[in-house]
Length: 277
Figure: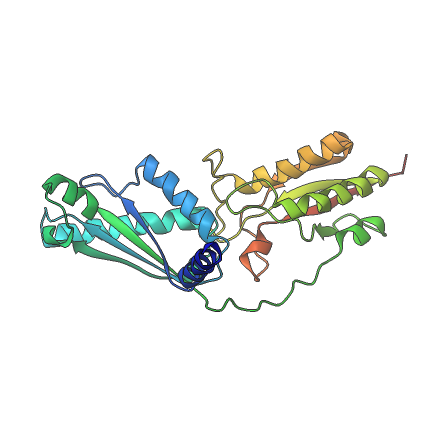
């Protein structure tokens, strides 16, 4: 019996994984700014869908039954746009968003409730629908630059080394677990190469234009700086002299043009070559 239950549960989870994923964000009366509690729920949802191979995302805004048709249409559109802005500020690829529409009001009878105020509260919302690829796409493997070999070889001022496979969590300045060993290896090389002076450059993906992304931990729009400082602090703690390194955020000025995860990156710019100790 337990085996049958387990198999049924696995089948149910598999069926769910093949369907769209939905999330709703609720708003206050006549407002399109996202309440703080709802924003936190939305950020948790973004973290969840970051593991999905997304085909497209649709965003639809709604209002309650009060107000004129024209007013409600504008307000619902503003609510949908506010959700898109959060997606953009938190490193979600905007090209995945196929629809951002305001649908105006929802009639009272749509929701199965008797409390009118509760009904209206449930109708002041944005619906987000995420459509995954089924099955997930086969993506070409990234050809690594092999930063360790470059750092160990001949270098000149102006050389820029991409720290390959040093990947960050979406919207945060800390590494995915598999990348810590990569940074440990880089630190060992830089401790030995005492002749290299360098600047650590942080980058983000998927924001509008060249803007920086918002660090979900601090709520500040300085994620590229935070990523560079994370690497700086890590190397400093590992024993690399602070006199040899600086850090800077490059926002989204230099996208690589590939998968978004590879724009959440850090590079080392060689600024000086001195004598080894």
